[in-house]
Image 1 (cartoon, rainbow, N blue to C red):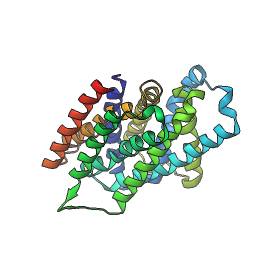
Image 2 (cartoon, one colour):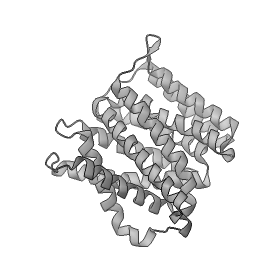
Image 3 (spheres, rainbow, N blue to C red):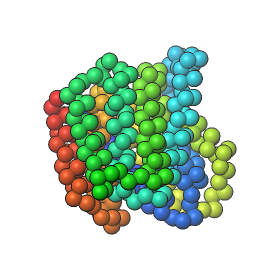
Image 4 (tube, rainbow, N blue to C red):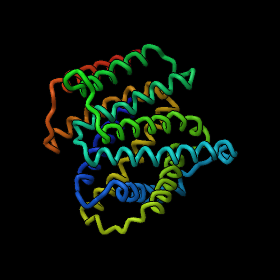
Length: 278
């Protein structure tokens, strides 16, 4: 049950490292996407021989088409999120990033009968809306193209994650994420063809660290989806935006508003309650 909470720490750490890299002027979000997924592929490759478990049903035309859909949606989601993260501070980005679990919860509730726990979805909606309201300024939502990109990217991630549950019975979590990331890397590489001159040794080390963090994080998510359900796992992962906010204040010296403090308290209460009702 507590693996998703560990995953929240990993997500927050990964976001902090990504923002640190994307703050570099000469590193654009397109090239970064290629570097990140190449790092994930390289990190996971030595373990592929031992953990690459795929069932024959995965090779049906329907499941291959579904996997292709997940990969293409993931490409769009990552590019949009990195585009937004490049320009927005993490304290601005954090409320927008919460829309991804919000969308995931709603889609899971609609698509899967097994996910229709009304107590959990109520807690999830309260927690999500509290962060949306924390982003309201002068009685209206402040939007720009980077905010719209983050919202659209969050929605695409939600689509990817909810559809992925249909494929998880045919892959172990490692195999599914490895294949997903390999093809995202291939697609992005042939589109953007980065030279590698926009990263130094320090950046390479951080990218490798990110390449270690995200596989562990996603394997925890997939494990949670299969064993705890999408909505319950996602509610526990709502701790992540709080940690992102906290890390942004500590490590990036960003400022926090009173609304963000209040929304943080609401989310913590919702997470505690969800553990009891889930």
